[in-house]
Amino acid sequence: MDKYCVFGNPIGHSKSPDIHAAYALQTGQQLTYEKRLAPLDGFPAAVRAFVAEGGKGANVTVPFKLEAHKLCGALTMRAQAAGAVNTLLFTDDGTIGDNTDGAGLVNDIVGNAGVPITGKRVLLLGAGGAARGAVLPLLEHHPSQLTIANRTVATAEALVAQFAALSGGAALSACGYEAPRGQYDIVINATSASLQSDLPPVPAEVFGPGTLALDMMYGKEPTVFMQFAADHGAIVRDGLGMLVEQAAEAFMAWRGVRPQTTELLAQLRSKL
Ligand code: ATR
Image (cartoon, rainbow, N blue to C red; front, side):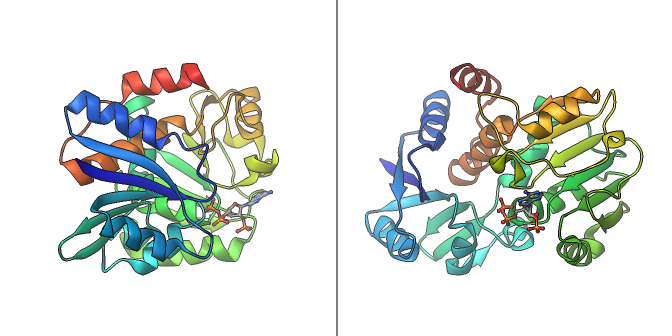
């Protein structure tokens, strides 16, 4: 049976084995998928060991996405753009690195939330790894505007410079958290602030009725960002849909079959 796994440290909390087991059952694919705790200083060796055991592919989570990017022999365009890899494909010709996080995000926004990105004003909060992976997939949907706001403005400016040639007609700009003006159609929190119950200090006016405010984090309770956005009229969404969708995209890359996600998302939500 084809073998897959997810590497991380810590890894105990990972929902990926359950998600991929559900996709395999649903699509009739024969595979196994397990969690692997890689030592912080031993990620490449852990990958080599899994390949030696006949592993066909793997997901990569915190804190190894940048290291995974470095060890691949080839990268998909979206992995190059993201500068990080969350999906590995082990082939006879070597390891291919992909990044399905951004596609997972836009599929969740457009497919699950039913909110089109095309022609819309989009505000992306954060300019770290998670935000960088989202930029190209968002631009591919041709928003009218993509504003990248970050605590460290220079990092947001570097992202704008990196993606300027790929803006596809979108007005692409960088600023600090306080700078955005007027209501946005979509506001995405790609910062790690929610982990510390912190809130990027964006003006309340960016939210309003009809704004979709999405936090890439998820948990039993809404994050402070989701609470703030909801208090100012936005429709809120956490990162559980993105998680399920990035996994579907990885499953597609490995198996060539796209699983249905709606039912699984509802099931996972009920178990949070
Ligand atoms: P990840 O891979 O999760 O994106 P990262 O690359 O370390 O992690 O990026 C974290 C992002 O969250 C950055 O945009 C960071 O802002 P800086 O670039 O200024 O460091 C942002 N961030 C982290 N903690 C934050 C906080 N308490 N308030 C606002 N932004 C925060």
